[in-house]
Image (cartoon, rainbow over all chains, first blue to last red):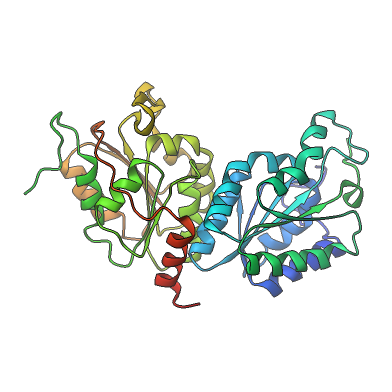
Length: 178
Length: 198
């Protein structure tokens, strides 16, 4: 992070399109564990008066948060990086049993031009781990295709009443700068 | 007046939960898995109860999402010390948002009651209200007696600050009173009661 802490990062076109999809779908709560790839979208959500954004200490809290939101009549989305999917497994069982819908947006680590080998095992297991826990998963490396997949996943989760995830390939975001 | 104390002089969990719910009004109540779910069921089933049978460690964050969604209504989370300890980070998350309509009450018997009464971290000194206070909760307290319980009942539905209480209770192993265990049914019933047919 070279930018001042309170600077609003420039959101990419795909981040702006995802934020617009959140608005269109009536997303009222967003939980997140920060990731560099989500920065612009987090800023858009934090500054949107129609969205209550909550920073989490660990990703599984987001499943509880959005289950509570759903109990209270609000739709939610959860932002994390791929390592966070590993933290969510037992709470995905909760969401599956109780049939709690939510969009899970995952920025991938441990793949294209990854500098940190510790990220590789969870990155490689992310899609299968989500599928194993009953989550419908989409994935893309194409920035132009991404907003459409998010719209599909949003429509799906609130119809299927189970979580739906979209994985954002590391190639789309760009390698982390060290 | 019926005593809320167990034979060893500590508060008795079922009596505590009945007292907490006496004046629930429109409040929304979430019970953590294990004994708090049995205690909430024993106090009387209610459409605005969400009983957890799993998802250990997430009672507070469920209460947080609910409190943010329904800011006009009091939200009460009743959970155990073991369940709370598994989700301590949730206290930081709830404290960062601190909705004024959220109260968390931990029934603290200093034991993992469902698994053989092993001592929990609160038996070794973990101070849950101190953690909540340091995480940004507006009020915190430890309740050990009838007077403290009466004062707590006056605070939990007031919606004037995100609150946390540890109620020290006797380590009783009481007969289970089991509510509906299909979480989708409990969730949908809760939503219908709160939101209507939609």
